Length: 222
Image 1: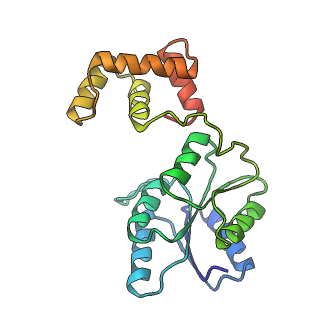
Image 2: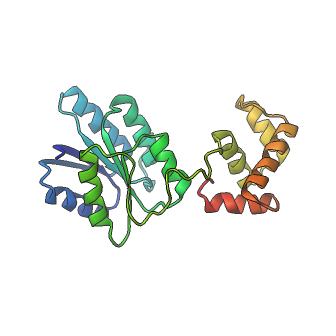
């Protein structure tokens, strides 16, 4: 079983539950932080001391307060950890249930398991930890029903996500074009953007831009 585990969770009630699961699994060293920045510092220190953590369990959402931070979310933390210790096992423990976002965590952030917070989350988390230790891949709690082989959303690219997010913020076609030009994102012409938006409306079977944004929100894209 894992020897050294770091828990990144800002709610005491949740962290107590996670730590109890780890204690039940007889894990000898358990550490807990409430800030992603602190988690990264501990990960780096473990590497320097030649006593690295072998498992990170992290939430996705962290409430902001008076403290200035560099890493604001679980994605930010996992991305930063992957740069310094890519081999560490990573489990996300969150209420997020949008299939696109969860798939992105596996595909882009290389997490090992995703456990949804819910009625049976303690048992699900315990199983995920055990399976991650056995080197199983793409471990998903049983209350999440989507399939990794489902082709839905596979064709959606980060470029499309950027367009959808700006549309959701009320940007016009010209505004999006200017934003893309300012950030050197191609293609950025209004004609190209309009064609892309029309393609997205066909893909999602949306009647108009408002309908498109509503569907994108349902999928967790924006």
